Image 1 (cartoon, rainbow over the protein chains, first blue to last red):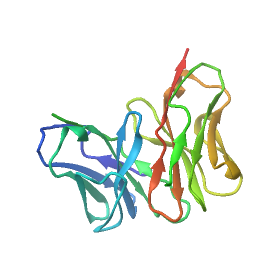
Image 2: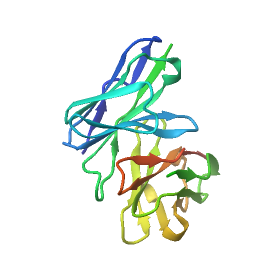
Image 3: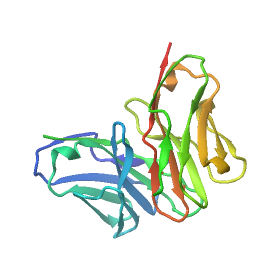
Length: 114
Length: 113
């Protein structure tokens, strides 16, 4: 089974802190994604990566950056956390993005910025 | 703009009632379609997917969905819901011309005993 592991289930950070959310997948997937999930808004794509060191902005990249130095690891960085970044963050991975593939999700990190 | 719309935000059903959750998308061209479910406290899981072929697809736990290309729809159905189906359901669309998997806003289903 594919396993997508997010380093923390719950995080509490202070406004202005630099925050790192880590995600690791164990199936050699090329594509990785970061979403945030908010009630009534569903899942919104922040960034995705289709290869090592490659990244593309999603729908809501402002205030975030990402890093993919190794194929299995995709990090989401909040440069200066703000209270409006309090949310559930979901990482996903997929083998290829052409053809018939599906995305697999981690368990999520609930981030609270105080 | 490309979008995914789920018609119902909150649905409450009694056990054994039938379920239909609507999903429409606005993409042109070839699409892959998915329904994901998120049980309370758990991660997103794939319920079913459509890539090509038979437009009626069957998923886990008795769920099925029908792809109607002319209506840009991919509605989720279950003939008889159970209390354990209480969850949030997300429709998602992947266009073969893009990288992203785009989600609807979700439908929260509560099944009462």
